[in-house]
Image: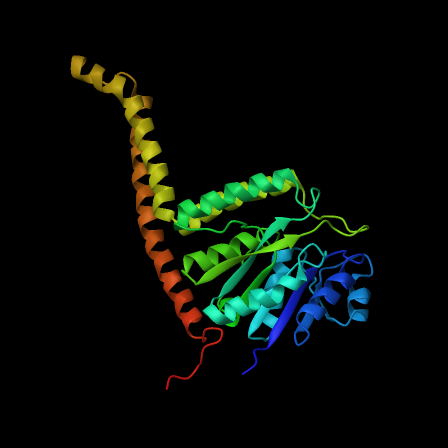
Length: 312
C-alpha cells in the first residue's frame, strides 16, 4: 500500500520564498499533497502559494504553535513532512527522510541542519540550540543534535497523539519532548540549510528567543520532572532554614531562651514550605506518570509507519 504523504508548510509573510519552497517539494515528492497554512500574512503569500499549486488554508490565531496544532488536526495522511516556507530547507532530502521512516518504522525523522551559507544561521541561535540540546539530554537521557529544526517527517501516530500546547516558535522543543517522553523510535538525517532568498526576512529575534528558551527550560523541568523540580526547592528552603537556625540553636543551648522570635517563626515557616514543596512534587510526579500512560495508549492505538494495522 502506497502511503499518503502530506507536506505541511506553516507560513507568515513568505511571498518571496513560498513558490520556490512549494516547487522544491513538488519535485522531490510528486505524489504528495502540499498544504500551505497562512498565518495572517500581510503580503501575497497565500496567492503565490495557491498559484504554485499548493492547497492554501488559514489559521487566524497568531503563532507557529497555533498553526501546527491546526495542521495536525485538519490534515489526514500517513506521513507528514513539515518544513518552513522560507526555502531554507533542502526539499530534495525529503524522499530519503521518508524512506528511512518507512524502512525503520520510525515516528519522527529530524532534518539536522548543515549550514550551506555563513549567514543562514545566526550565532545566538547556535548557542540556544546547544543549550536546549544539553538540557534535554540531561532530562531524558538522550536528545537531538538540532533541537530547533523545523524540518521534520512524522508518522500518523505521532501527529494524532501529539497534544500541541505551545503557541509560538517553541513548538519544535515541545515536539522533541513529546518524542523523548514517550520513548518513540526517532532518527536524524543531515540536510542542507540555506540562506533565505532575497526579499524574505526572518521572524526570529535572538534576545526574545533566548528568553523564550529560558522559560521553556524552566517550564519543561517543572512539568516533566516535578519531583526533582519541587524537591530542589525543598532542599533550598531547608538549607536556608538550617543556616538561619544555627545561631538560634546555639543561643538556646547556652541560655535556654529564644531571644529572636521573628527568626524562629521564619525558620518554622521555611520548614513548612519545604515540606509542602516536597509533597507537591510527589503528588505531581504521580499525575505526570498517569498523563504519560494516557498519551502512550493514544500513541499505540495507531499502527507504525510501514506496518500493518491488523494482526494476523
